[in-house]
Image (cartoon, rainbow, N blue to C red):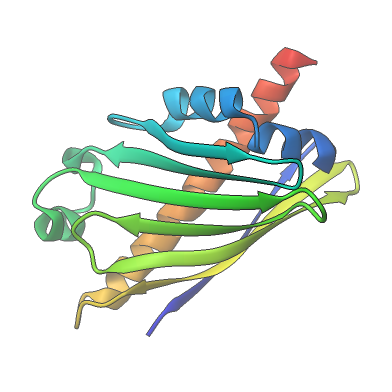
Length: 164
């Protein structure tokens, strides 16, 4: 059984500015340096006039993981995250895989203007194919994704403010 995830973050910045940051290679490297955990890496980055795709790798030290995850992984958690964005409509897709876990997160991301700024919405599902433990891990992953998106939203606002 997959767990649905829907999370929204808001920004005082208009969608065009937030989008420009989200598809900026320097921004991604800066975000990874601040929030990427152990051995963060921008693995791939491709931009055209119509779309931008990238893959990020981030690490979470084993001692910062809940015991259920530590026992399963036997070490640090490595997160591979691929995003593809299209400028027309400011929409994207995200795929997240985790080392040592037969599971993934797949979703869509939408960035739109909202009163007072903009809103980024992730809608997706987390699926972990481990009998008995899968549901618990799905809930943990969904919770951690929401926390990460909140931190990234704060970072984006600060990053944009430094460049205003």
